Image (tube, rainbow, N blue to C red; front, top):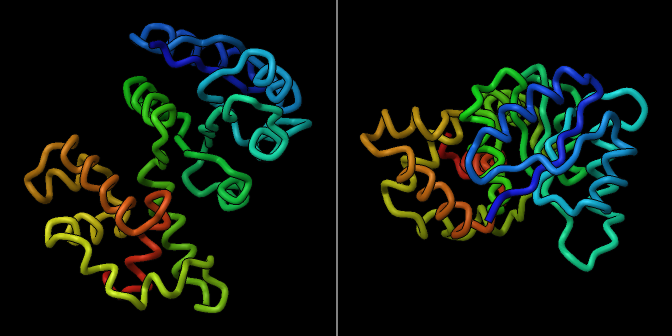
Length: 226
Protein backbone atom coordinates (compact mmCIF):
# COMPACT_ATOMS: atom_id res chain seq x y z
CA UNK A 1 0.00 0.00 0.00
CA UNK A 2 1.45 3.34 -1.06
CA UNK A 3 2.50 5.92 1.54
CA UNK A 4 0.62 9.15 0.82
CA UNK A 5 2.72 12.30 1.27
CA UNK A 6 1.77 15.97 1.51
CA UNK A 7 4.70 18.24 0.58
CA UNK A 8 4.86 21.68 2.21
CA UNK A 9 7.45 24.34 1.33
CA UNK A 10 7.15 28.01 0.46
CA UNK A 11 9.49 27.62 -2.54
CA UNK A 12 7.89 26.08 -5.61
CA UNK A 13 11.22 24.79 -6.93
CA UNK A 14 11.79 22.86 -3.70
CA UNK A 15 8.29 21.37 -3.80
CA UNK A 16 8.83 20.31 -7.41
CA UNK A 17 12.16 18.68 -6.61
CA UNK A 18 10.71 16.84 -3.61
CA UNK A 19 7.76 15.61 -5.67
CA UNK A 20 10.11 14.25 -8.35
CA UNK A 21 12.21 12.42 -5.77
CA UNK A 22 9.23 10.97 -3.93
CA UNK A 23 7.11 9.95 -6.92
CA UNK A 24 10.05 8.05 -8.42
CA UNK A 25 10.25 5.81 -5.35
CA UNK A 26 8.18 2.67 -5.23
CA UNK A 27 5.46 2.79 -2.60
CA UNK A 28 5.53 6.58 -2.18
CA UNK A 29 3.03 9.03 -3.68
CA UNK A 30 2.70 12.81 -3.38
CA UNK A 31 -1.00 13.56 -2.96
CA UNK A 32 -0.73 17.34 -2.64
CA UNK A 33 1.42 20.42 -2.17
CA UNK A 34 1.11 23.51 0.01
CA UNK A 35 3.15 26.71 0.17
CA UNK A 36 2.50 27.57 3.83
CA UNK A 37 1.53 26.00 7.11
CA UNK A 38 -2.04 27.27 7.11
CA UNK A 39 -2.79 25.69 3.76
CA UNK A 40 -0.94 22.57 4.88
CA UNK A 41 -3.37 21.97 7.73
CA UNK A 42 -6.40 22.47 5.49
CA UNK A 43 -5.01 20.15 2.81
CA UNK A 44 -4.03 17.54 5.40
CA UNK A 45 -7.61 17.44 6.65
CA UNK A 46 -8.91 17.23 3.08
CA UNK A 47 -6.44 14.71 1.63
CA UNK A 48 -5.66 12.61 4.73
CA UNK A 49 -1.99 11.87 3.93
CA UNK A 50 0.07 9.41 5.95
CA UNK A 51 3.03 11.81 6.21
CA UNK A 52 3.32 15.58 6.00
CA UNK A 53 6.80 16.50 4.74
CA UNK A 54 7.17 20.13 5.75
CA UNK A 55 9.75 22.91 5.84
CA UNK A 56 10.29 24.10 9.40
CA UNK A 57 10.73 27.75 8.37
CA UNK A 58 8.07 29.41 6.21
CA UNK A 59 6.50 32.87 6.03
CA UNK A 60 3.10 33.17 7.66
CA UNK A 61 2.16 29.96 9.43
CA UNK A 62 5.44 28.17 10.15
CA UNK A 63 6.07 24.45 10.08
CA UNK A 64 6.02 24.41 13.87
CA UNK A 65 2.63 26.12 14.07
CA UNK A 66 1.23 23.79 11.43
CA UNK A 67 2.63 20.77 13.27
CA UNK A 68 1.00 21.92 16.49
CA UNK A 69 -2.36 22.33 14.72
CA UNK A 70 -2.09 18.88 13.14
CA UNK A 71 -1.32 17.23 16.47
CA UNK A 72 -3.83 19.16 18.62
CA UNK A 73 -6.69 20.15 16.29
CA UNK A 74 -6.99 17.07 14.11
CA UNK A 75 -10.69 16.34 13.54
CA UNK A 76 -10.37 12.58 13.13
CA UNK A 77 -11.74 9.99 13.00
CA UNK A 78 -8.49 8.64 11.54
CA UNK A 79 -5.24 9.33 13.41
CA UNK A 80 -3.46 12.53 12.46
CA UNK A 81 -0.71 12.24 9.85
CA UNK A 82 2.84 12.07 11.12
CA UNK A 83 4.97 15.15 10.50
CA UNK A 84 8.51 14.96 9.12
CA UNK A 85 10.14 18.39 9.16
CA UNK A 86 12.85 19.58 6.82
CA UNK A 87 15.54 21.91 8.11
CA UNK A 88 18.36 23.65 6.26
CA UNK A 89 20.80 23.66 9.15
CA UNK A 90 21.69 20.91 11.59
CA UNK A 91 21.37 23.38 14.47
CA UNK A 92 18.03 25.06 13.92
CA UNK A 93 16.79 27.17 16.82
CA UNK A 94 13.28 25.90 16.13
CA UNK A 95 14.04 22.19 16.43
CA UNK A 96 13.47 22.03 20.22
CA UNK A 97 10.14 23.82 19.89
CA UNK A 98 9.10 21.58 17.02
CA UNK A 99 9.72 18.48 19.13
CA UNK A 100 7.39 19.88 21.77
CA UNK A 101 4.82 20.65 19.05
CA UNK A 102 4.69 16.97 18.13
CA UNK A 103 7.00 16.60 15.14
CA UNK A 104 7.94 12.98 14.50
CA UNK A 105 11.25 13.63 12.82
CA UNK A 106 13.78 15.98 11.25
CA UNK A 107 15.75 15.65 8.09
CA UNK A 108 18.25 17.99 6.47
CA UNK A 109 17.21 19.43 3.11
CA UNK A 110 20.47 18.29 1.58
CA UNK A 111 19.81 14.64 2.43
CA UNK A 112 20.28 12.13 -0.38
CA UNK A 113 17.10 11.07 -2.24
CA UNK A 114 17.23 7.52 -0.91
CA UNK A 115 17.70 8.81 2.64
CA UNK A 116 14.63 10.99 2.18
CA UNK A 117 12.62 8.03 0.92
CA UNK A 118 13.72 5.86 3.86
CA UNK A 119 12.82 8.62 6.30
CA UNK A 120 9.33 8.98 4.85
CA UNK A 121 8.73 5.23 5.00
CA UNK A 122 10.04 5.04 8.57
CA UNK A 123 7.87 7.97 9.66
CA UNK A 124 4.80 6.37 8.11
CA UNK A 125 5.63 3.14 9.96
CA UNK A 126 5.56 4.99 13.28
CA UNK A 127 9.28 5.46 13.82
CA UNK A 128 10.89 8.71 14.92
CA UNK A 129 13.43 9.94 12.39
CA UNK A 130 16.25 12.30 13.29
CA UNK A 131 19.17 13.20 11.05
CA UNK A 132 22.34 12.10 12.88
CA UNK A 133 23.82 15.60 12.91
CA UNK A 134 20.58 17.03 14.30
CA UNK A 135 20.60 14.35 16.99
CA UNK A 136 24.20 15.14 17.92
CA UNK A 137 23.59 18.88 18.17
CA UNK A 138 20.43 18.39 20.23
CA UNK A 139 22.27 16.06 22.60
CA UNK A 140 25.19 18.47 22.96
CA UNK A 141 22.83 21.38 23.64
CA UNK A 142 20.61 19.55 26.11
CA UNK A 143 23.30 17.78 28.09
CA UNK A 144 25.13 21.09 28.54
CA UNK A 145 22.17 22.45 30.48
CA UNK A 146 22.14 22.42 34.30
CA UNK A 147 20.44 19.26 35.57
CA UNK A 148 17.42 21.23 36.78
CA UNK A 149 16.78 22.48 33.25
CA UNK A 150 17.12 19.17 31.42
CA UNK A 151 13.93 17.99 29.70
CA UNK A 152 11.92 15.80 32.02
CA UNK A 153 12.38 12.08 31.81
CA UNK A 154 10.81 9.84 34.39
CA UNK A 155 13.46 9.93 37.15
CA UNK A 156 12.26 6.56 38.37
CA UNK A 157 13.16 5.12 34.97
CA UNK A 158 16.79 6.06 35.49
CA UNK A 159 16.88 5.06 39.17
CA UNK A 160 15.38 1.62 38.62
CA UNK A 161 17.43 -1.14 37.00
CA UNK A 162 15.95 -0.40 33.56
CA UNK A 163 19.40 -0.63 32.02
CA UNK A 164 19.49 -4.24 33.13
CA UNK A 165 16.66 -4.91 30.70
CA UNK A 166 19.12 -4.40 27.86
CA UNK A 167 21.56 -6.96 26.56
CA UNK A 168 25.28 -6.15 26.42
CA UNK A 169 25.01 -5.52 22.68
CA UNK A 170 22.01 -3.24 23.16
CA UNK A 171 23.96 -1.25 25.74
CA UNK A 172 26.76 -0.84 23.20
CA UNK A 173 24.25 0.40 20.64
CA UNK A 174 22.71 2.78 23.17
CA UNK A 175 26.09 4.32 23.99
CA UNK A 176 26.76 4.94 20.29
CA UNK A 177 23.28 6.40 19.80
CA UNK A 178 24.11 8.78 22.65
CA UNK A 179 27.20 9.86 20.71
CA UNK A 180 24.99 10.83 17.77
CA UNK A 181 26.09 8.09 15.38
CA UNK A 182 23.82 7.01 12.53
CA UNK A 183 22.63 3.41 12.24
CA UNK A 184 25.14 2.85 9.43
CA UNK A 185 28.07 4.10 11.50
CA UNK A 186 26.95 2.08 14.54
CA UNK A 187 26.81 -0.98 12.31
CA UNK A 188 30.33 -0.33 11.05
CA UNK A 189 31.61 0.08 14.61
CA UNK A 190 29.97 -3.08 15.94
CA UNK A 191 30.09 -5.30 12.87
CA UNK A 192 26.31 -5.30 12.41
CA UNK A 193 24.12 -4.63 9.41
CA UNK A 194 22.25 -1.32 9.29
CA UNK A 195 18.94 -3.22 9.44
CA UNK A 196 20.12 -5.10 12.53
CA UNK A 197 21.06 -1.85 14.25
CA UNK A 198 17.70 -0.32 13.35
CA UNK A 199 15.94 -3.30 14.90
CA UNK A 200 18.04 -3.08 18.06
CA UNK A 201 17.41 0.67 18.41
CA UNK A 202 13.66 0.11 18.14
CA UNK A 203 13.90 -2.67 20.75
CA UNK A 204 15.87 -0.38 23.09
CA UNK A 205 13.27 2.38 22.76
CA UNK A 206 10.46 -0.07 23.44
CA UNK A 207 12.09 -1.64 26.49
CA UNK A 208 12.91 1.74 28.04
CA UNK A 209 9.58 3.35 27.14
CA UNK A 210 11.23 6.06 25.05
CA UNK A 211 10.04 7.68 21.83
CA UNK A 212 13.14 8.65 19.87
CA UNK A 213 16.94 8.74 19.72
CA UNK A 214 17.21 12.06 21.54
CA UNK A 215 15.33 10.65 24.52
CA UNK A 216 17.52 7.55 24.37
CA UNK A 217 20.65 9.72 24.40
CA UNK A 218 19.36 11.74 27.34
CA UNK A 219 18.52 8.51 29.15
CA UNK A 220 22.07 7.26 28.58
CA UNK A 221 23.47 10.57 29.82
CA UNK A 222 21.38 10.55 32.99
CA UNK A 223 22.21 6.89 33.61
CA UNK A 224 25.93 7.65 33.32
CA UNK A 225 26.45 5.65 30.15
CA UNK A 226 27.74 8.50 28.00
